[in-house]
Length: 269
Image 1 (cartoon, rainbow, N blue to C red):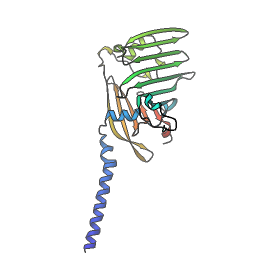
Image 2: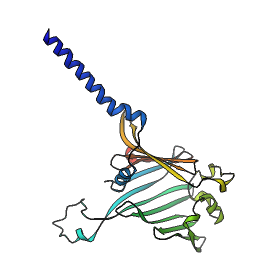
Image 3: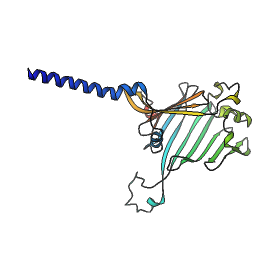
Image 4: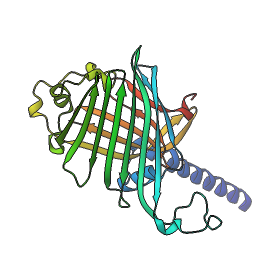
């Protein structure tokens, strides 16, 4: 009799523990998507161990790619060590964080836009410098600004004509208006821009950007992968969703107008 009770007691305990652990692992988090720490997620993005190579598609058709490459800057204190004393992959004195992005996107059958972006952040994760260059057969645009400057430096080169302009950062609240004001080809920025209807009263748009960072699950084949999900909302109209691995690698980005970017490691899933 006692053995029977012991058997059924152990069986009930085993079922309860497995059910409880399964719920913790797959149930509640998978259903709710609770908030995650923005600082922790951003820190993992800045210190991701590997680069993210992304394939860009528009309405299911491949149109380009880009590489997202985070790097940790190292101060001179650690550089004084002999080569034999240094351990590869370990940074003892962080000076800053850097993210480089480079790639290209097909705009038309005979024209392709190349781009490169450089971002630098201090050890407190606050941005210090941003520079970018966009080029195509039509010409190129170069942008540069720093946290201490209140202006965005812009250089344009179209049809052999060069032009430089400094724009107040406070004026960068309506990209569509700026593009039209400077007479830039809208299609050069990204495919599908023309598919988004311009606001009827742009002056009345709330000039804000909001985001949320969540714990979530991402389905890979028949399994689920624990990830972070970042939702960026622009002008209360456009939503960009980022799927980030737990170590900071970018897995997927969903832009408006059916423009997506998927990590090449997951293309076959």
